[in-house]
Image (cartoon, rainbow, N blue to C red):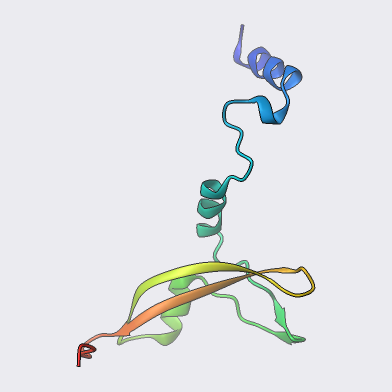
Length: 100
């Protein structure tokens, strides 16, 4: 059986929940997808235009001497049920002793 016939047979005879790669919630895949689309936040907030940034672009807006330590993406659901993506960055100023 050739590849095309094989996959036509699979998708024609099995439900999506019956294939071996099915996941009820593909959190790992969604996490990876979110990492490659960092500029997907809201375009407006409370009626005002906003600027969307990737972690690197947000870090660049601070400039030297800040160093990007880590970043995280959060998907926030508003009270109206709208999904909004936010980027949080932790930056450290080089040369500052923060142990004191």
